[in-house]
Image 1 (spheres, rainbow, N blue to C red):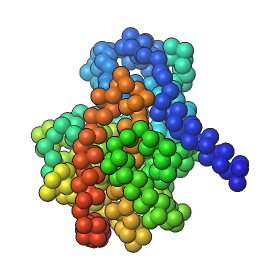
Image 2: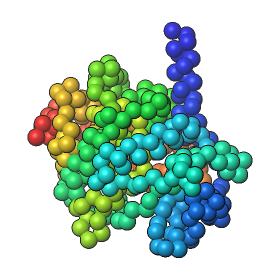
Image 3: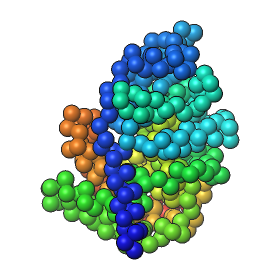
Length: 356
């Protein structure tokens, strides 16, 4: 028992380190040097905004575009390799899916480990996909259905994928929601604290006991509008799925809830987009009865995880506070409204969408 507790504490410490470790500031010149020396790519380099890793867009002399990613120094190398390998797996298993192609180095490596200004970092270069961010596009239920369908296809392509690092502890993985109880201390407003405590207590009573029996797979686990590109000419059509940085092996139902809650709206249309996403996902990956029965509970759990981590990280990194909290006010409003709805009616509504 003592050993198990120590292991859990160690794993949680590593997961926390991936969120809090300081990183050296890589600039465009450094990225350009890496691209030329290790990938034979010469071109104009521009830094992209990112919450955790450091990413750059490069346009080569022949017009080809790539993204070079310097993984956060707190991220373990095997986890970075896991992300690379799962992308390569999808490239091979389902080449028609619009995800980035991993570019090998000049000597054939898909992962590159480099000393970057005194920190060992994993470097990955992928093709750049064109499109408009879904988060900046008009939202329709057709669009959200199509995204759910695409997310289901991604999960289908990963059902037979495995990797030694697939079970790494990720605090964004809702199955570890209980690990965030201490993080709630950053929430001082009593009413808001009470909402979060209700969500976590509900998870521990209704979801956590069932986790061992739920279907599991490696999944994307972060299907939000900042990780999705749509066709600028027809924004209902999904052009690309980006960023596998939160990928992990977890319950498939958790992945469904993650994507669905990101499609929630506000006011009278609070659940319309989420239900459309659910219908699209289950058209590709039908859910089992025990997964359907806890979907509403997983909605609450994911909202809890999203709010607690972003509020906590904003206090860890005050200089990046505005970017980290860019969507948190909406999340609070959505959670408050979700908790104000008649529970059994809402549960029934979500369950019905999961069966259509």
